[in-house]
Image (cartoon, rainbow, N blue to C red; front, side):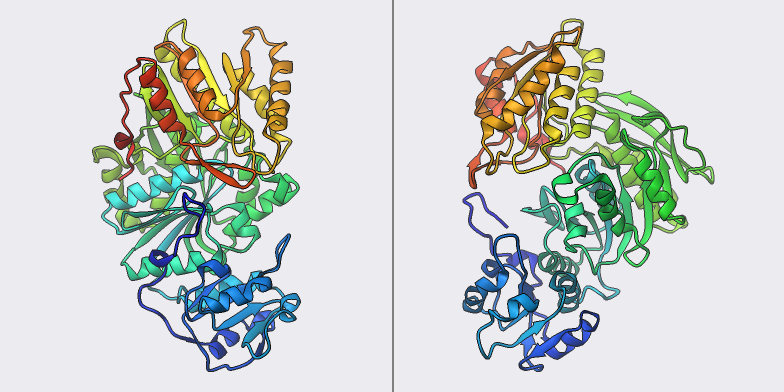
Length: 554
């Protein structure tokens, strides 16, 4: 995991504190379906596993995986210096192994990796915490935070694994990936088990399924939010993207499945997944739906939804007639969808005799579990002007965030209120998103400030140009004539948005959410949209009514 200074954190708290001894021969037997070939001592004892030479602990099996530029076998000597005692690799890595070093060769090392990690950390036992896995393009983080909050309100010892952080009984560690690599994931689950964690809310990305990071875990409930264009640089097509998500819903991977069947602007993907999972629990968003498909015969449906402050009150109804009322504290009906999915997953994961107790907590707890804030997800920084930071970084996410902003503007801002948007596009990612996001920006905002997100190794100016050109071309055909401004660096763009704002306006800083560093040509530069905006608000004489501490999620 990368720290703020670009180094690597010792993953001490993410490993079991008590080492578990495993004979290498027993591990080989466990990997039988991968046709392992052991060279060396089967009586060798291993106590952990790592695929990164910088995070190897003494007693580890070092896993050497082939990559786009390098093979993990190139770093065997560093792994040995850190204390690795054996290597797991593929046939292309075997030739680089030093003579006399005990190693296991398999045909597909990535596929074998999760099974090896699960066996070494004993995550195939009844003592493993109940895991609630959430996948989909948008909404994973928010849904897992709601799951965590509901389970905590039900007095469970909880764990959280996701984009923002990892939590073990409320103790947090920043995250590097949405879903950790298999060795870190399985050691983390074992650490949670050791700490007495009973239930875990976990984001499961398409990358995690494609790279088999999240394999060899058994999910109590798997939940699906929606599917819209994203990550096509990895998956190639929407069908391949869908297939990666659908892996989580196979019966040997999840005990129960909950599928939102009309979530997002492309509800056909939820319908398709439900057809592949005939025993799944289905959720119809009803009046909270972005697109009303007229779905019937869903297991659960939203029957009432009305504004309540910046959020909503809503009612969920089961086909049996059972009903539950609760609230969500964040703007946007998509957050009603996220909260509803979390609630239905909780009910699905519990026996019917627990439902009344769950409903009581959802209806009566003060604040309601889904009223808790989620860092960088429609996070309100100020009320006058209203300043919101959100992670929206793809076309659907940006559309939904802006739609929520504009509903708030119409109800609270007055006739002169404007929507001011600050956003950029990510480098080294799906380039087809850039013009789409530029067009969406001018269709929904009055002032559009295009800046940098994470350029990575691309030229930031070229990324901005692709967005700006599409935005201005679309703006020329719109009646409300939105203003399009290009400003870099990002801190200046955020400050300019505040300078342009009146107390009635709404500012949305989109794309980075909770992130506190920006990647420019491989270098990490500190920037937190929330802190930059707070400073700009103070400099411009506005009162920052929402402090950083008020946005906590405990």
